[in-house]
Every structure is written in structure tokens, then in C-alpha cells.
Image 1: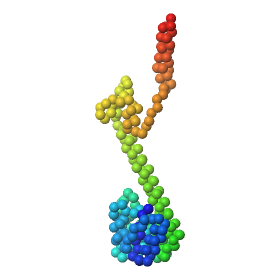
Image 2: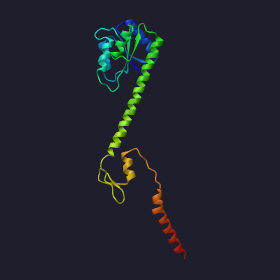
Image 3: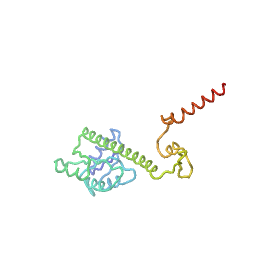
Image 4: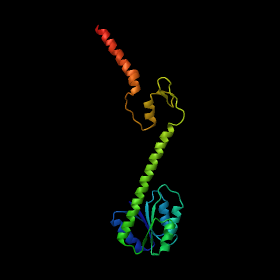
Length: 209
């Protein structure tokens, strides 16, 4: 798991980097908000970022606001690192686009817990996106079956898009995930199978005579 940290304070940045690396994360480093924004806008950006609020060029809150203003399929989880601890500042940070906050100087156990929360949220987002993709694929398959389908009035074969006639089960298998097993319904048992069996038994008796 890659995590971006952005902090213009060298000591704080190195401490944060060493702590996260010790826990097994791959750490990307930015020294100001503009650099952090470029990383988050780049190819294959990290899914989680820890941004110091007070930075030159762009502060952490401005980075959050710019990222949230951009529609992305996989929005990153943004954790704002700040020395501001009053309720008004916290509310401003969260309203500005941060998912969570951590006060400086940070406590390693609290940092680990809040990063863990971020990872769980990202995992839930990934699972939800996967379910949405599966639903969209299922709806696309259903739409293939909508409309007027030519079917033979006698043998019940269906004419496919290539103008070939196919058995119903073959056509549906090609357009859906449905799989078929064959059986005999009660009506066909009475109207078809039993008369055929009776006829075969009659012919068999006639041969024995």
C-alpha cells in the first residue's frame, strides 16, 4: 500500500516517513502542497495521503479542496495533519474535503488507527465499485434480450443476429449466464411421452404375436 505524505517541515516529514515505512507502507514524499497535488493528479496516484495543513505554495486544505473538485473514479482518502485542534478548525478541514484529521505532534498509535480506518474505507469503496461494475455488466446482458426476438412458431427456434436459427437454450446461453438442464414438464408427459410409450408397447405386443 502506497501512502503520500506532504509536509514542509523536514523533521516532521522524516519522522512520519520512518513510522509508516516501519509498518510496511511504501511512502511517497512531497515537500509542499503543489508537489502533493501533482502526485495526486499523476498516473497511478496513491490512494491515501497525509497532508500537513500549513504548507507553502498550497496548504493541505487547499489540496483537499482541489482534489474534491475533480471527479475521479477512485477518490483518494485524505488525512489532514494539523496543529489546530479546536472544533472550528476541525470542522473547516472536514468540510473542505479531508476525510479525517490528526493533530501535531502526532501519536503513533493514533496515526496507525486513523490510517487503518482509511484503508478500510478504501477497501469498502473498491468492493462497492466492483459490485457496481458487475451490476452494469448484468444490465448490459439483459438489454441484449430486450426488443423483438424472432422465434419459429413451430419448432420454437430463435433467429440470432447472424440470421441463423438456434435452439432457445443455445441462444439464451450465448446472451446470458444462464445454464440449462433438460427435463419433462407434466403437460408433455401426458400429451407426448405417455402416448409414445403406449404406441411402442402396442407395437411390441404385435411383434410378439
